Length: 270
Image (tube, rainbow, N blue to C red; front, side):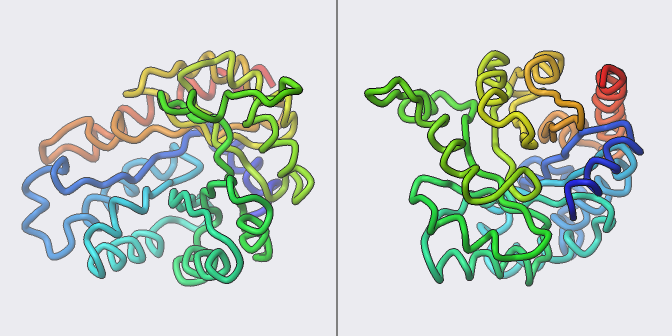
């Protein structure tokens, strides 16, 4: 998917919602366990209920690969079921070099046909450029995450006062532009989103941490929104597990609609 196609989808749907398909067998409604593929059945119903309200889906790969070949089958079926006009993100956080990165890219871009994959940038250019060799596919680099451990490295400064996340953005901007590179920026500290936006004025941000993790959508928009929106805000648990009953898909839609309605209002400012 191209940048302009993504922007068009945001404008049409009046939404920049990304729904994380972090499907946990221990949390899905128990009646689904009687199905041949409970993970796919859950995902299918969530997609049916929410696809008109979101612009992206983001399966967290760990929730699938832990089930071995069955998990990969569930993931592939999920990818084939997602409507083609919706942006897809493999939340895999891969980070290696050379042929290893190339084969990771083939897995997510060719075999599973994701539009994008999250990548850890800390091995440098040769861990990222193999992913950029695939036409119309995106790399989403970890920049400034919302977990407590982000303080260990991402905000540390060198002797010139440059923070590590700033160095990551500055260096990576030389490898590709905002039509191929996005950045993961956590939602729990709004002012930090503003700091990243100064470093990457045109890039799209994938923003986790809104909803169950306590991030404010208003703050995300205040500090991070651009004239093209420039945001994909992820919500997972708040939507997926809104109900543990047979009405879980309807409950998920209700929660997704609440977020989309707030996003529609925020988009009116651009």
